Length: 158
Image (cartoon, rainbow, N blue to C red):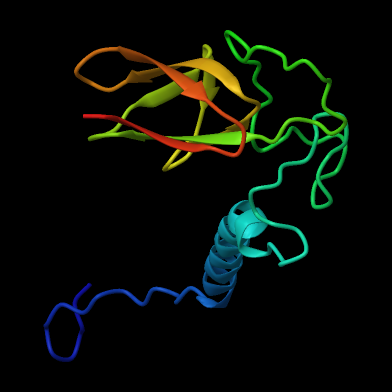
């Protein structure tokens, strides 16, 4: 549009948008994302000395921070081949072991054909033999892992 007095082009007046609602939505999204990250990391970070972080709830009873209708954060897996039973039956449930899987550069992780997700997939499992499978971009790799009570195994696929 030309100004009649100066003959120069002048851009038409455009009403300015109010940025308040946009910033409010962005702040709410940021708060929601940070709460989600804190919630997913809460079980490891909030472990107290009276409840060690390695103790996992039994499959029959959900954890204190989970509602009964939510799925467990760590899947319940059964060993491919269980350890041989001892002569006397134990009075307490067997202590769980832990398998951590590292796939370099990246890939999907499966333990006994059940997908395990996360940056560093970890599963707490009863003693026994498990098949760990990684599917990196280079192809599928399988390993059998024997896990004993209270043991921590780190399986790396490079």
